[in-house]
Image (cartoon, rainbow, N blue to C red):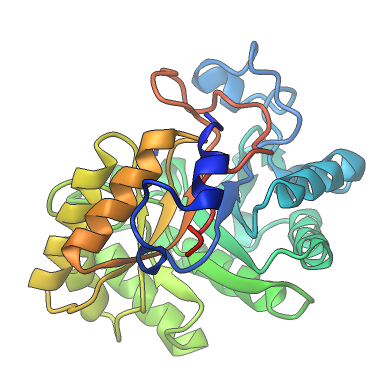
Length: 329
C-alpha cells in the first residue's frame, strides 16, 4: 500500500469524461491520520512514534474537536464515504496504540479504541456520510506475509479481532458498513496468504453472511484479481464487488483487473476503488474510461492522502478536497 483539485468543475459539468454509467456513487477519503506534521512524518520510525502518527481510532477521545472538524469539512467538500484503517498487531509492551498500530492482544482491540470507532461511525452518520469502510490491516508478526509457516495462534487472534470488532460496530448507529478483512492481502503469493484469505473469508461468511464485505482489497498487479477470486470461492460465495488499490497506470490496472475477473467467470465486474491518488485529474478519466471499455463498473472512488511523485506514503495533511464525484448526465 502506498500508501489537483482542478477537475472538480470539469466533473460537475460532465465534460470530457466517460458516461455516468461507468461510476455509480460518489466516494470519499481514507481518513488515516489526525493532525499530521508532514515535516516529521518521514520513515518507518516516524510512523511508529505515537507523538507523530495518531490514527483516528486512537485519537477521537482526546482530539474530538479536530476529528469532528475534519469529518465536517470532508463532507462539505462533497465526500459521501469514509474509510478507516485499523493497523493491528500484538504489542509486546502492552501499549494500546503505538504510532499507527493498535494492539490486538487477546484477540480484541482495546476498549478505548472500540469506543472511538463506534463514536466515529455515529459522527459520520450525523454528518450525512452514506458509508464507512473499516479496513483491518494485520501488521508485523500478525501479517501472514511474515509467516514462514502457518501460524494458527496469530490467525486465531486476527479472526477474533475481526469478529469482535464487526460485531461491536454493528450494534451502534452508523452509515452502511463495508469491511476489508485484510488490507492488500488479496492475490499475494506469499506462502500463507492464499490459505489466510480463504479461511478468513469462510469464517466471516459463517458468522455474518457474505454481505457487508468485499473480502480483501487488492493492490493492483498482474494475476492478483484472479488469485483473489480463486481464494474467495474456496471459502464461500463471492462478494458483489472487488476492491482495488490503484495508483500508477490506473487505466491499464482497471482493464487488467476486469479481464481477470471476466476470465474467472464474473461477467460484469464491479469495483470499488479503495485507494488512489488524492485529486489527480487524469486518474479518474483513465479508470472510468477503462471500466467502460471493459464492460465493468466502478461503484465509487476513495482517495488516499498522497499525490503522484511524492515518494512517501502520505503527502497531503488533510483530504478536504474531492475530485472524484459521480459524473452528472
